[in-house]
Length: 334
Image 1 (cartoon, rainbow, N blue to C red):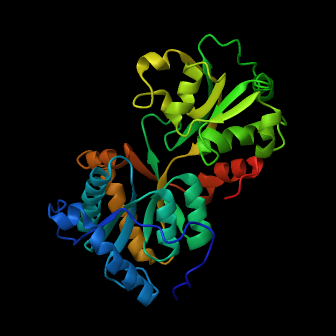
Image 2 (image 1 turned 120 degrees about the horizontal axis):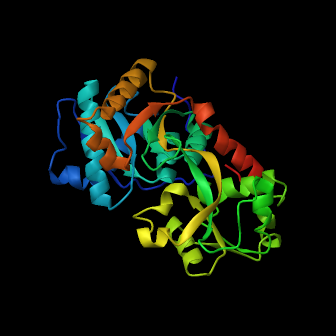
C-alpha cells in the first residue's frame, strides 16, 4: 500500500526545473521543444500522482528520476535526458527525467512525484526520514581520495605558521583566535564535518559557540569564495572539500599558494536514492541499468552528468554513517 504523503518543514511546493520522458525504444534524447524546455509537462505529471496517491512508476506508467541541476538549466536537462533515454532502453520501460536541486529532489520523493533521485549525503538522509528512500549507488570521481568518499580539509596559506602537530587536537588547537572561513552552515565538508571534528576533539561544545573559539567566523557561500578568503588574507584558515583545491574552483597558481593543514576522511560521495515503494524487481533492473554506465562505451554519459567515472553499490547505513555522526557531533539538525 502506498504511504500517505507526509507533511514536514522541509521546503514544500518546490518548482522542479524541467522534465522529459523517454520510451524504452529511445536511444538518444529527442530534440523537440518539449524535450529541451519541458516545464509545461510537469503539472500534468504532478496532478496525476496527486490524484492516484502513487508515483508514476508505481502505477506502471513510467519511472521518474530526479537528476542534479549542475550547470546551466538547459545543459543540465539535456544531460539528464541522455541518461534517462539510456536507462529507459536498458530497462525496456519509460523513464522521466527531472532536473532539480537536492531540496526539490527530496520534496519530490516525499510528495510522490519521483521514484529515484541523485542526492548528496545529507539530503539522502533527509529523503530516508521523509520518504523512506535508501541510497543504493554512490559516485566515484577521480578527485575523491577515497573513491566513493572524499576529505574535508582545513587549508591555510603556504607560508602560514600553523603546522601539523601530529594529532587532531594539537593541530586544531592552533586555530583558537584565528579568522575562520567556512562555506555555509549547510555545507557538509565546508561546515558540518569540520565543526564535528572540533567538537570531537573537545575544542568547542557545538556550532553555536564558534565565535568564542575563533577570532572571526565568516561564510564564503561556496568553495571558491572560502578559499579566496584565505588567498586574500581575509581569513587564516578555511574548511572546504579536497576536490575544491583544483580547477575549476581555483587555478593551479592559486593552488600553489595554499596547503592542507588537517584532513577529515570519509565524507560520503553523492549517490542514487530509490524510494521504498519501487518494487524490488524494478529496483534491481534500475540498478543494473545504471551500472551499465560504467562500461567504457557509456562512461561519457555519466561523466557529462556529474563528472563521475563510475557508480558503485553501497550499503545505505554504512555509506552515510559518517555524516550522521558529524551532524550529531556538530549539533546540526537533519
